[in-house]
Length: 441
RNA sequence: GGCCCGUUCGUCUAUCGGUUAGGACAUCUGGUUUUCAACCAGGAAAGAGGGGUUCAACUCCCCUACGGGCUGCCA
Image (cartoon, rainbow, N blue to C red; front, side, top):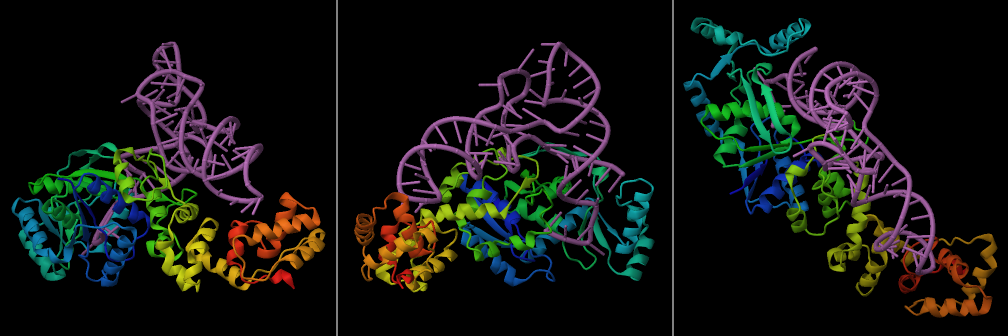
């Protein structure tokens, strides 16, 4: 049984980077017929906000990433306490009392001496009396996991063989001075409790993974399969973290990006599988393979989503967008033809409004000087609205007869006079929608 | 500073010592179309730099440069 999870912290809305992680885990679970857990990592009551929990769910629903189960870390604190107790009982857990300032100072000192800034384990040598004295003086300390100082190896689903020397890492703090459990232990306990079999996450967690593996083993747990995907960068290769604020899923939705455009790109970007626009999630599931992802940072450009969105819309039936078209004020009997005509000529659904304005109110004509006389002559021959789907053919036929113009020289000036643009939908269909001809004056 | 990972067409990547360095997206040209899109055909386009090892290096090793991550009482 394959079980995966997406574990966001509800301290903000999710962005494209998070989505990549969520999607990979979702696709793995679905492809294997397994379970996809949405785990809310809300151990920090101060930074967590219920509005983000709702927001995350809305964003996932928008994309159709249906989860099978929701878990919340805030409801599982007793499990973390159990694990902590066990670590104490096997002597792999110790209390330390340095203040953040002191630790900072130690790190700087180590750096100056050319040494790695790793916690010096001073607290390990405290006598019981010293410990009690410090606790009385400073209150509860933090609890650190005592790493075995050996190399930690695992075979990563994307990175391959990874080996990290525990001696180059500080003993991780698992419980803060205020008693709050930290991500490292909560995640370990949850992943094993919940039977998670495959953990896919960003490569910013690689070092964490090494310590988590040791903690799992210390607790007698079996580590899951890990896979760490590369992080996204901006189009220039710059770190994306500073710009993620503008790449929240809800902002993309607000800009009119279509779900399948986003999903198709994110499910393949950075992998060796070709990026193809898919219309069904099932197609993304079927072709998904974590191991085909590369390890180098991946450039992501939001601009790529717009052409993809345009392509998605070209395939959409009226039923999918009927509500939005009705909202524009398009009469029901014109909706079908309106959509058929416009869907090839928009980037996002936001562009529909401009088309409806053009059809219902007419367009400011564009008439080249050398065509002025011709257009005037043609306008005089144009019947009164409403037009139908024969109007264009009949009219241009008559104009051709009268003026001798043909081909592009005939059609283009008329298109520009009627729509104000040199490109756009098929003119026969356009005529049936066009209700006002400003060029006629 | 230390540790981990990385660097192949514009972009995402294939290649696990011998290839005309392949594909996809984007781009360009032609065809088709009243226009645009779509579609069809074709084209241009790449191994960061320097040392090794080898008959042979994009591929293995070392150095340099550059990019990303970690180095938190964040996740």
